[in-house]
Amino acid sequence: MGASESRKVIPIACTLPGEDMGDRLGDWAAVLARVERREPTDSGMRLHFPADPVLLASVAELSVKEADCCAFFTFTVTIEHGAATLDVAVPPDGREVLLALFAH
Image (tube, rainbow, N blue to C red; front, side, top):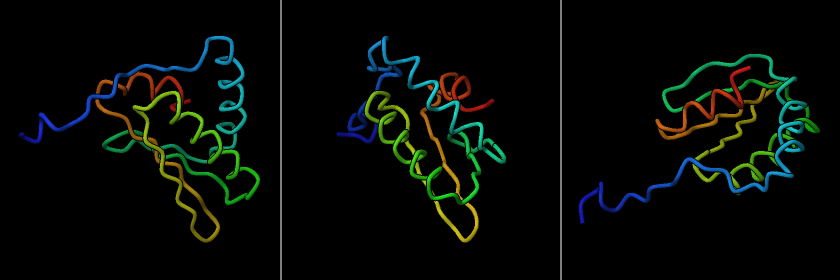
């Protein structure tokens, strides 16, 4: 089996029930209001946050929840002295969704 045959295709779709969508977007809006800087990456977006433990706990919790309902997202949290980043990666056809949620 070739490399392209062994790759699992993950659909660009959200499985979160519609009635929960507004709450989730509100939760992300509260966290994203604390972003200090955004920068595009080859596979998505890097968000810079202050190294606030309560904020980073929310970032991690939302990332886990989002990965459960939107399997095409990949989240990586990096914590360094005095700073933290959230890298959000998507396949090329998921870029529009990523920008809609994380670019502003």
